[in-house]
Length: 268
Image (cartoon, rainbow, N blue to C red; front, side, top):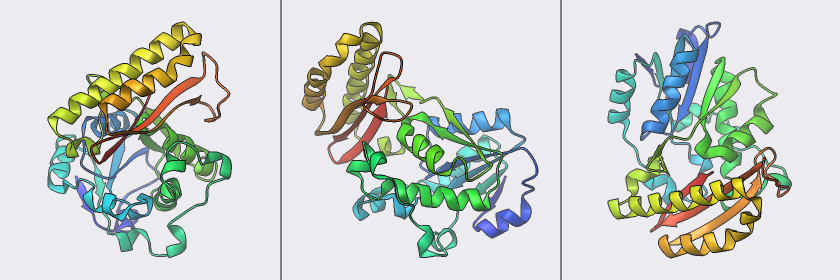
């Protein structure tokens, strides 16, 4: 495994004409990340994993400072997985030009996380576009827990670059989605998260069988509000375009909520 601290060094040493997979992460690796790496290794000859806590996608500076960083344990995990290349760049190495930091979203896309975290996806698009320009991998692997993120990346960057976007199934612990932020939770809060996920999964399955059950969303919101500190949003949207034009085949449930001061997202 070769570790690069510079994007330019990576570009010099890696043959991008080969079948290469790319897994971008912000570190604090968990079973969800491991699943993405394994998907890349199955599909590609070589795999690159980046670890970069991207400041431009945090709309609150305190959230950026608190985000878990576990670089030594991350490297151990990646070595065990026999990853070929790891990129751990500094902020100045990624953002050499301030104009690169954000890409503007259209008004109709400012829903769900984009509405509640102003500037977040603009920052995500900014860093992914920089990676796409420099890391010319054949595939990029992204987890469906961040479903809106995949949708936004496909919509704004999918046609501009040759890298094919592969979305991968959310990995869960007792229905609760793995997330780096889970490392900031107490055991009590994790069990609360499990309870919330089970409520949502049950509601999804009931609505799939009988679409009229979708009207019970407010009752579900009340149940979840009694468990967590705050529900930021709980919405049902069309999984193809994130509009509110839904039916039994295309609906998806999206949630953002807080356990104490830790913000979590999920979808079913």
